[in-house]
Amino acid sequence: MRVWTVVALIAMTAVACSGGEVTEDVAADVAADVVADVVADVAGDVAEPQTWTVNFEPGLEVRDGMRIVRLKGTAFEMGQQHATFLNDELKAGVAFLESNLELGALEVVAREFGFLDEAMVQSYPDIIDECEGMVDVAGEDGWTMDRCMALAYGEVVLDYFEAGLLQCSQFAAVGPATTDGELIHGRNLDWGDMSFLLEYPVVIVRAPTDQIPYVVVGFPGNVAAYNGMNAAGLSIATNENGSPNDLDRVGRSTVQTVNYMLSHFSTIDEVIDYVTTSDRMTAENMMVASGDEKRAVVFQMTAAHLYYEELGDDGVNFITNHFTVEQMTPYEDEKEPDSSTYLRYRRLRQLLDPAYETERTDKLYGHVGVAEAASVLRDRYNPQTMTEYPKGTFDVTTGGAIAVNAAIYSIVFKPGDRMFWLAHGEKPIPDNTFRGYNLNELFGNDPAAVAEPALVE
Image 1 (cartoon, rainbow, N blue to C red):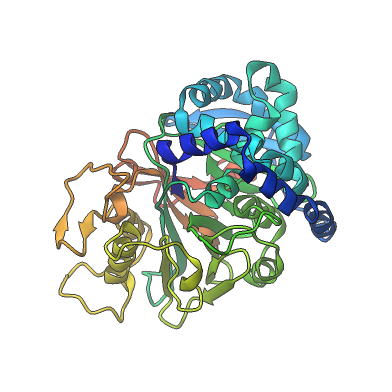
Image 2 (cartoon, helix red, strand yellow; image 1 turned 120 degrees about the horizontal axis):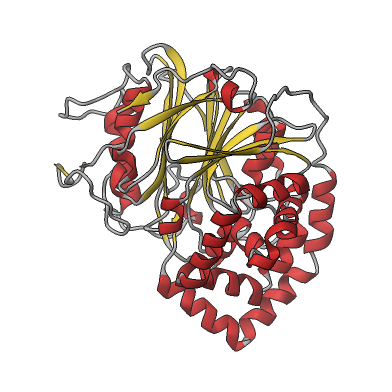
């Protein structure tokens, strides 16, 4: 995830509001190609209907401080439900957006530079429809179409202007790397000290008509997924990267693509086929895991270049916010050798890579289970200074450890068992209890189903 900076977005707003040459040049570059290319792409996105059982009525539940909102039907209907059940929270979101310099500037920049016009053409139809459903209910309360789409398309705007600091960590372990051979997928979603996101975490359960039911960990108004898991046993999450020379304003938003894949795909091969043939716009790292297949793949991608790698025989892989292979590094933004992304990656290697030599005695390879995965996400060790940060450190700028980079959510997925564990609440998030969720219970198919273990303290 990219942690947004006030200075960059204010600067963009000033340029955008001045109506200078940048706006005109961008509009000219995009206008000739955007409609034809994306409409053709949308036409190929129609999936065969499948039957997936859910047994719940749409509604809102609050459990241990976590809002669980269940949505069902067409995207427009789910948008109406979203805005109905989370109406008070959306009003709080509007107030936050209007008082927050970073996010407030994002909407202005997206509008003035033409990104919102492009978003209405290039976004997946379900994203647009859900936003329209939300506006149908909450538009008079300030939840406008521009506001909804700016958030759903925000990573494109931020990547284009290279705004923000890169954070986030992910890993996957299976087979010999784990205690029981089952696949574990861990992730910290780092997004800075965003009070609204910290105060209003939401588990969004979606059962879209004729598509695969899935669950997203997000926030009120979140229609494009940064992390989620579906009924077919796929878990997906993204980490932001940056590129100074390989971006494109024609294509798909990666976080919107996560929604599409969760609602349409059941296997890693389907995901690989789709990602490798999709029209991309930005620089991202993405991990997709399949619990049933015991496979996971890491994608490293820019608009025109892509590399992907599956788990090897050692059954482990990890990614932070830089490219790790020579064929991709020429296209990413320059990072200092001691920057957070490299330190977090090195620490993941120390903990999880059986081939990485270290004098530390805390290697977890071969012993990864749910509790051990949570301990990775809580790890505060800096492999460069050879020290641990004090417990409770919440550092958005200089943190050189996995758990001190402003995590909004810490999640452990066990997709083969249709379970995940989520830490939320007071910052720092990874220090909190990881509470378990079972998809069979969230989908209403087995109200007695629980995660095992129920908690990771």
